[in-house]
Length: 291
Ligand code: PMP
Image (cartoon, rainbow, N blue to C red; front, side, top):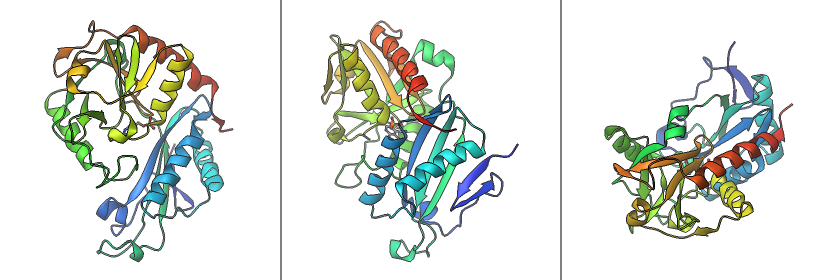
């Protein structure tokens, strides 16, 4: 059975889904995107993802050629067309086709692409044992250059950090901001536990305002776990009791080793376990129905 992909108002098979070599998303990384997840026939936090997409687009003066209502419907329709209940949805809006110069005024038609497929970030074993990660030497962009709040098609420094992780045989790379504070990972936000308090860097340190991050902050508060959004350094990270990463694709991924140092007791911590359980429950009950 073919995979149906939404490209500019039409559904085409995976084999036929192509973009122009003059597309500025391809030539310059000029565009924005979202990664969204569906669980058991419901799309998790769809409104939050759409809001972030439109905010990212506004920040780069990109007009999405569909209203939010229409785009919501297209996301749901793509899932129905592929008969999916559990899926990862990639929503991409690029500047569209232009000429070889970078001027966006030469791109009159921004392009919308929706891909709904499966994703598996890490093996079940890694979720059980915890990930081994590294701290990369590649820094986050400074907000004055490219604001990390914008979920743009420019992931090159994250990719450089990921290459560092690959070379060292680690699953993910933690990235610092220009001042040396922990910001986030290449595709996930980061949390630590210190003296029973759950801490994550504030967004202004240089992280994407992750939707999973916000869900975790709320779930922790509900459980009576104290939470703080506070900058922290490499030393605090190494000496944390627990550490985990959050993201739509990775969900909640426990970390048990950073730069070969054992974190806490070297196994998935109690607070992390509790939050994984609560997160999984929430994804089963909340969401926008597809069918
Ligand atoms: N940071 C970065 C750089 C990301 O790309 C992502 C999403 N893949 C996240 C954090 C996590 O965001 P969310 O929970 O909204 O998926």
